[in-house]
Figure 1 (cartoon, rainbow, N blue to C red):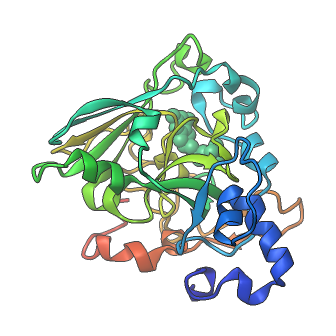
Figure 2: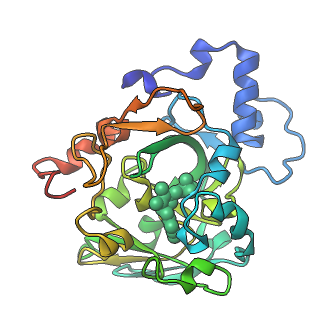
Length: 310
Ligand code: MTE
């Protein structure tokens, strides 16, 4: 576990400086250059980010893998459908409504929402409930920053999220494969956990549409379906909110959906996973409890029966 965290052993400790620098530049663009004291050239469309102690040292998947093997049912059922059809989605202008049990409800343009917020490069493992996984270098910021600004009231116990509903641009929403719009939720301590981020980019570039542009949730210790894409609404609520996959199949997808190798999906094992991009003959890897993020999150579930509250 410990060796997976850059906070304890950095890539610079094990990699020659030039290679490390190149990798960091690729990942974080102008931010890494500036941080390293090098002359930063024109930033182009690159996002400026800072490194995070929460990043894994595992090798990131290629941008091609990350953008051509997706689940985004608003654009179809096949893994390649989002890459084919998501360009139809208008992501600018975009606004996010923050409401419910908060002191300062409001509808914010993406720029206003992110005013004064520093983007971080967060390289996380990402484990889908279908037993495949990737390593993704997200650019984002803790959800807690937005919630703290809005002033969550003590009576709020959960945060509910909603994806844009726009059937004219999202053909899947004209079908009944799922109930639309896609909704998700987190308990308040999960929402406030420093690992929980709103991501607006990947590899230092603005979020690709098929990955949930312009802003999506990333909760790395939970199955991927909790990481809701293309968010337009964040609401602080008193009661546990409904979630799309739990509505669709409550016996298969619980509210918590923490990555758990000991609790199998009714139709397949969750003990191992297939890392995308590893090639046809690469061995399956062992799935880790909480996707390997137990140090940061296990305490939140103390005393809970994770077989019952799956
Ligand atoms: N969000 C919305 N709005 N619609 C979706 O279909 N799919 C979920 C999640 N967020 C989904 C969504 C699932 S099942 C997974 S595994 C991840 O997004 C996939 O994210 P990725 O395609 O960026 O890897």
